[in-house]
Image (cartoon, rainbow, N blue to C red; front, side, top):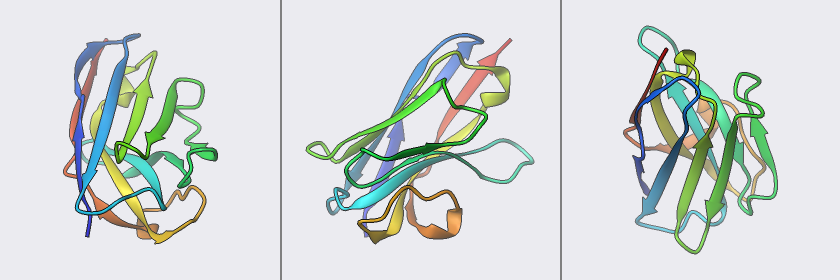
Length: 126
């Protein structure tokens, strides 16, 4: 089982940027598609962005397209989420996750992910 630890969250004003990191340990994630999800208070966890094992194929929620960029560095066993032009509605706890099956494309549903990090809080003030 892989351990995932997110970092880089914080509080920013609307229009600002943050870069989240997800460091994996315990095993390599280089064969797994990875994703970022977020959960705001009182709401269900929702898909934000995903990428395949190589990083060449990505998928984004409509709400973040053009503002967020997911990437990975397999040599560092780490996945990133660059968030630009942040909006108050982006406020949530952000979780990274590893897809259950190896060598797949990006996945958008929580059921397809087997390993989850504890999350990092992102707060965007207006």
